Length: 141
View 1: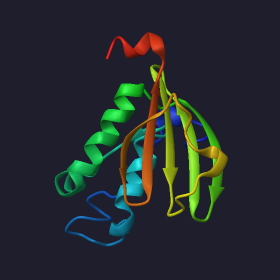
View 2: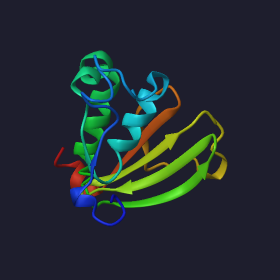
View 3: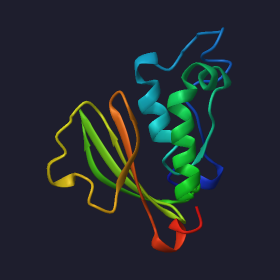
């Protein structure tokens, strides 16, 4: 659905049926940061599980702010720069700027390292998000 109809695709990690007190098929806790780094920076309509906001808010809140600041929308453009077992890198273009999102344990990005226009916005275990605002948008924030 995300590839065909992104403005109708709600993305989430857990909900009241899978996680929380039900705990039937919870998202792996060791990957919560990576999961939210992905859904909050990529196209679709991300939904944060209420329980996660209270438990992991310090990690989730900057990701929400990055999405809002770059004005990433449900149909924003994504260019996947790398997709390997220990390294994923994508550039997401919003209305006000771009996000560069790295997921995975690999630290050496080689020639794919962010350029000077990108500034590290937030990071956590096995994820990092850089932002480059368009010059016409930077003065508005």
